[in-house]
Amino acid sequence: MRARLLALAVAALAGLGLVVPSSPASASTGGTVDGDTHPNVGLIAFYDADGRFRCSATLISPTVLVTAAHCTSGTLGKTLVTFASVVAEAPPSPLPVAADPSAGYTAAELAAAGYLSGTAYTHPQYSDFTDLRNWNDVGVVVLDQPVTTIAPAPLAPVGTVDAVKQPRKTLFTAVGYGTEVRQAESGPQKPTPMSYPIIRRYVEMPGQKITPQIIQTNGNEKDPFGTGGTCFGDSGGSLWLGGQVVGVTSYGLTQNCRYIDGYQRIDIPVVADWLAGFLG
Image (cartoon, rainbow, N blue to C red):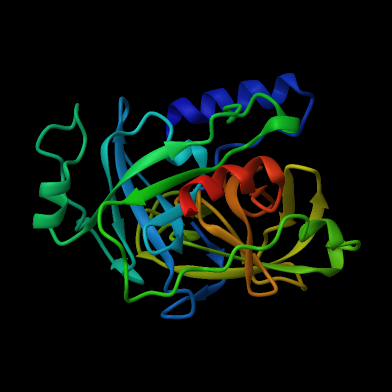
């Protein structure tokens, strides 16, 4: 993910006395190629002052996608949206380059390239990884044109996750376009996040801890109770429980994406009330 975000997250969490994430989470390690299992989960791409980046997001109404705040904060211009399950199996990336990167994408150039466009908004109480009690790592992308061919994902009612009394015996499902973690074809033969393929995947993970703001899971494909975890590119992707979205991918605790993953809860009043303002 963005070097700027990484530096802020590490410094902030260290100051809180927490285990420091190596980065905001961004591709799936392990897991299953999604195909059309979660057609309402899309990939978003956008520019900020540091360049172009990508995240995952989930359609929650015909015109609104929910994602992470660190995938919307500082966005220049429009945000690209696609619901293709396979974006690219190998380089080069098919995503267009903005005519003026300093201004970001325009709706016209995204439409000409065959992509949806939208405007990014960030939760006004997003703490930018500085306050775990007021994390609020959630944002939305409001589409310029509604999507009528994909059913929006159902949001879990407020307090849904509070009913989970045994997180370690509960399986959560995360969906996103994160990178694979595998051995490189050359050089040091250690598991490394790869840039390609860019494919929608889902993983199942047992819970690890639940707080009033955050859900943490054990995201390791070698876990006997799970199938993998989230990684670079999964940021903003949805976390599901019982067929409903309960969170969005926020952070991970290791560079090789094989340990604990963190998700911003959206079934809490401070988030649900803000989202309701976009859903009418």
